[in-house]
Amino acid sequence: MFVSEAPCAKRANCKAAHHLSLSRRNFWKHIARFVVCFMAAFFGLSTSKAFPAELQRRTARAFDQYIAALEARLTREEHFPSTFLSIQNLPSPRQSAVLTMLREGGIEIRHVHARNPAGQAIPVPGGWIHDFVGDVFVPRASVSNAVGVLLDFSRFPDYYRPEIIRGKILSRSGNDFKVYLRLQRTSPVNFTVDMLEDAQLRELDSTHAALWTRSYRIAQVEDAGKPDEHEDPPGQGSGYIWRMNTYWALEEWRGGVLVEMEIVALSRTIPFGLNWLVGPLVSRVAQATVRGTMAATRGAIFATAGPAPGASPKAPPPVPEKN
Image (cartoon, rainbow, N blue to C red; front, side):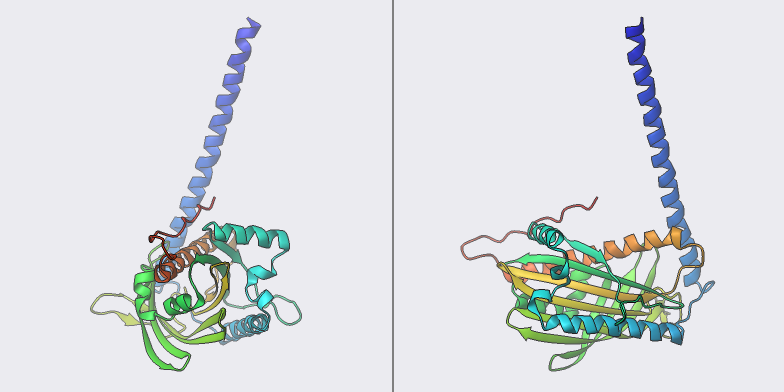
């Protein structure tokens, strides 16, 4: 009797635990759905100007200070090949693990923060800075292959669609370019912006190069793709992207090229008291965007590198899923 009841009790406990686990999962699913719905509702209303956002001078100045600190660091790192890439500044065990993962076809994403010369955080009143670094390794490719892809702005819609739908070089003087891009997002919010940027190729040596792109005009496009599409004045609209700079670093390494991108964007802040709810979702969307950009860049560069001598063309290693 007691022997037969024990398994029953265990099964009952297991079922109870299973139901509790499902309840918790369903709870967090409902929370996630609520956050997505909230984002769509809030920012959707924002697009219709119910909640407009305007870039303030103090916010723009703070972003400029942030960029000055970041570029000062990057300039210092350019002079020392051993620290040219930010992954080379990681602690040894972590660095080794990251490099192994990259060689196996993985993508490294890190959320970073620039600091002022005193090592302090740089406050950005009225704005929110998103600063992420991504790394990939492209086997059999060279710095020249990578530069060719990153300067082929007219093909960005092929490489980075659906995020980039238009691209062209407006003018060029040596290694300095003026570029036009049209960016769009459809999830979790829908918006389109036209961006003008300065791009500067920095050829350091035969195995190292950098490409810096700095936006100097971003305008949100209302009714994009329709006959009556029009731009909001720069600094106005819903405030999804007020500024965006991208810093590429390229280094030849072990029969291929390491490609690193640091992207820094300035947007409106989240309403007071809602950062705990919306902030993590925005961060996840940003990381997914960086991951997609790095995967697309890797594929485009790999396609230009060609197969190894005597080998047939084959695709780059698959990108491991991130848990």
